[in-house]
Amino acid sequence: MKLIASADENWGIGCNQQLLVRIPDDLRYFRELTTGKVVVMGRKTRESLPGGILSDRVNIVLSKDRNYQIQGAAVVHSMDELNQECRQYVSDDIFVMGGESIYRQLLDCCDTAYITKIDFAYTADAYFPNLDAHPEWELVARSEEQTYFDLIYHFQKYKKKGGNHGYNR
Image 1 (cartoon, rainbow, N blue to C red):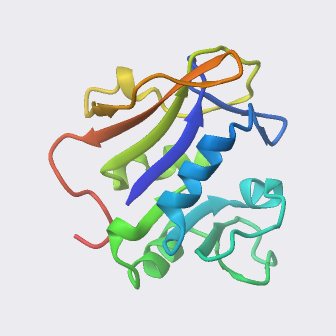
Image 2: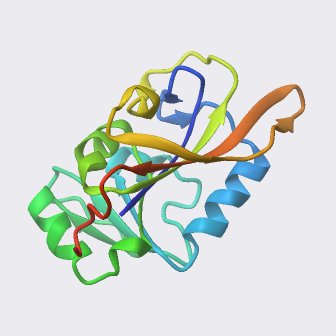
Image 3: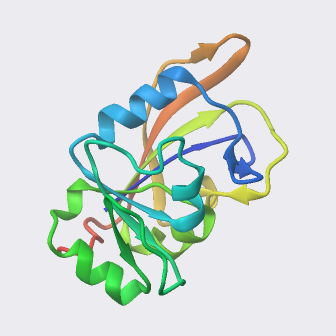
């Protein structure tokens, strides 16, 4: 499994259930990587999406609410149910897309992280785990400097040391 996120310099990813900033090239990058794949998200992340679900992808939503349902998505209610649901897909085609608690719960199951790292500190109330401080993760690729107006950012790729950690070993 893979992780995908956009994070500021303090690893902030959101505030008040919204992205910190919408960068068109970052959204395009997300779309390119995840179209035709499986995306795993929490209920709050799903509810923050403009269209409710992401088209051209298998949407899996993790929610503790056993009555929660959403048309066009598989809803699971526990890590065991998520594990069972993910087994039907190739682990390399599964992207965890948030929010904070989902990233933290699934970090150990993932082997690759695609992070758009923004060189700015926003006010945030949701954070991605700091992979730079995580001894199990290493930065393996970084794009040239990207800009959006006066904002500087990089597309970064991290790999977990030690190989595959997904559901479908």
